[in-house]
Image (cartoon, rainbow, N blue to C red; front, side, top):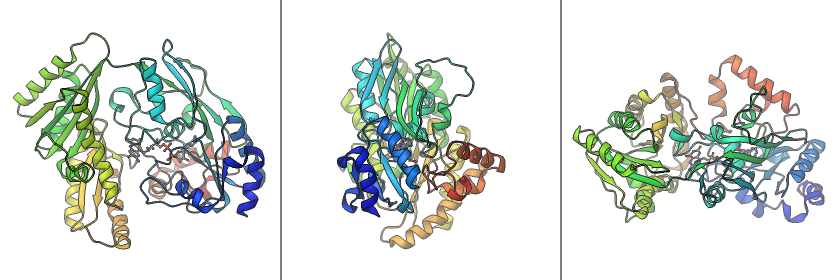
Length: 472
Ligand SMILES: Cc1cc2nc3c(=O)[nH]c(=O)nc-3n(C[C@H](O)[C@H](O)[C@H](O)COP(=O)(O)OP(=O)(O)OC[C@H]3O[C@@H](n4cnc5c(N)ncnc54)[C@H](O)[C@@H]3O)c2cc1C
């Protein structure tokens, strides 16, 4: 069976583009967290949109499902299918050409397999900024960012991937190529079709090209690290900072002090400049002749004067700013090093963030002795990663079983606060049942209608986002 599938595609793509041996496929079938393992008949690595289209035609003919994959950094098993024996993974990694950068139109077009880092660097080389930025940017790919509607640290100023994408090129489930590039910022010719594919997690087609909006590259950036007494004070400070910094804030990351030990697992020499129950990493940026430093200094002086901030450091150099960011990035890696843990990616209304964190912490303390909550996130967007580490030494099977119960309790709490169980990572396979169980019937009907209209054979990423049996 495996050899047959490899032979079908090798003829079209060339043999180097088809991986069908277990060792070769292993990296594609394990996700970044190591929590999910998948299977596939083969991994295909096309180099062009024409090749992707041929692949889709062949998959239709041979009744093989298609799992699109970018950098495989998604955390919800969207590009990993444990049931994928009759599926091929289509990796975009060899489609990695920047097609054009236009600093006058402020646009960039690229193959879907370009890493987010490569897109950011190509923009910078043209004195522009592509503001999508996230911890996985060296590995995640722009097609994956489109398919997951990625967020990241700059959402509060620039929006999510959905706000930054001008056009897409997509190979549809019937193999036809839809070219949705126009370069236009204003275009009211009916349905905005690209939006159907953004956030569709590979269930409606394979994104092969992406056209994004660029912005002027900031010429001044100020990075501050602050300590406050509580999440409630953090959100008060956020509202104050937005106004006091002329809405030029690009990041407002909130970190519960309990997370700092995780960052130290990665950077043992870490210098954390404040001691407080809640830490804040804030970035303000501007292009043009604005005295950003004095704006931020004035804001900090007033926040300290009001007693809202107990300690504050303003980075004096780029390397100091990078060191401050390494606290935030290190804690994510440190968590991964701790192995299995309950991972959530939720959002609640901004004003509810403090109450949500307090209740979630109390729930864990009361019901799950020894489990350690870690609350941090892009809180300026109401996005909290409320993760929970198992007690050290608990065996993996027990941890996963209790972890499931904890996740159920936390997601119910999110619903009570009128929030979302997925602020940015998506639904994939790991959040599918929780999502589908709570979605309104009319919501599910609309989703099914779209799926069946575009993919009547149920070829694209079955079981991701909506249950496979519901999609036909
Ligand atoms: C350390 C770390 C930090 C992260 N931080 C953030 C963050 O701040 N914000 C955030 O939003 N996410 C974050 N993520 C999650 C992840 O990086 C994003 O979801 C990212 O957009 C996924 O891109 P990818 O190329 O790795 O996609 P993959 O993981 O390969 O795929 C994700 C989904 O998209 C589909 N897909 C991929 N490529 C295509 C394509 N070309 N066409 C159609 N469908 C496709 C897949 O089928 C799958 O359903 C983080 C992950 C890690 C590991």
